[in-house]
Image (tube, rainbow, N blue to C red; front, side, top):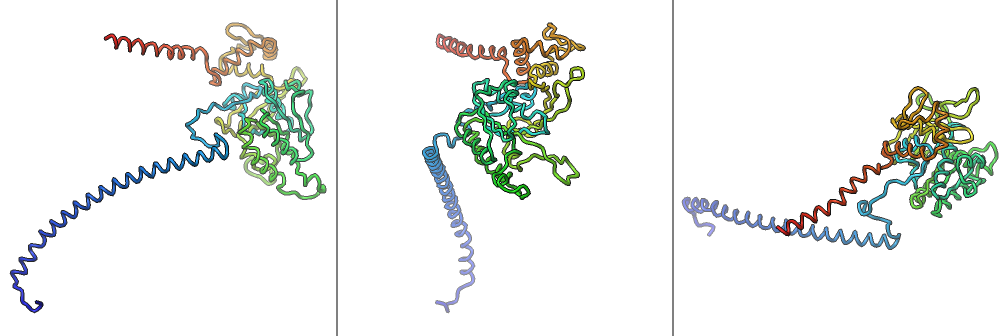
Length: 409
């Protein structure tokens, strides 16, 4: 066969016929490919659907196991439960409540109050304690400085008979006591005064000249890691009072820093810088301080807002003075010269007289405070809510009438 000669015409005819046969074969093969591709696609879709169903089942099984092992609510979808606004403890100054953005100190969070000596740090903390107690809460005070004045606290409105006070010997003891009180779930607010006085046990037991580098910072870091979660569960507000120190060799920027390392700066939801800016006098006698508080960190509202208020010696933050200042700033109280007027009625001449008048008339002071909070959005206006509620209640009736009319038609 191999030796048999082939005519050129036969060879050409045979090879000319092939392209047509190949094209027909190719067309059939293309159709087969399209069909197999569509089948593969539908198969992949079915597989993806099955995989999606398997993922949902696996997720539900994992969520069920987590709930059984760690308790219901250990994990949830963020949209499953409507979260209430952040609960707060008022500070005693409406100006500071407004600067904080939510009406007070947030519950379940860490708050740091720092500033120079005699600037009003402890006074602000004690006013928060008094506010929590007035609302029926329980408060604790870890007096690491051993400098709490019960008489002064009583003048600020603190119920000293019900206040839980501890004067620990070491920093470890102070933070362990604080941790146990927080985990009890009974406290509304606890104050640690101050971070600088939380001296580690090794430093107390050592010699005076011994070097203890980073001991306090490590102590604070460990303690804050432990108590942060407990605070969130118990809704307890932990207020850490801190002192200022100066960094050596700083030529640019502020040399001021706070003691206790950097952990507190990170864990705190709110940090407030308290400064005395003016001495208030009656004649030649000093009667108080004008204080400025700057919210340098705020995780629950916009930061960097400032508040100014008066601290009167022996009485604490002047609530009435803050009402006068905020009322004038927001147009609720009119000031003409030295006279102050509210809704056409004269409150008095001079800030001190108006302060005394509001102190003697608590219902009027509360009315002014309510109007200020409504104007600044911290409270809802009941007059605006009433029509909205009426409109909602009227809607079902209208719908029912329309349905009846449609049925009759």
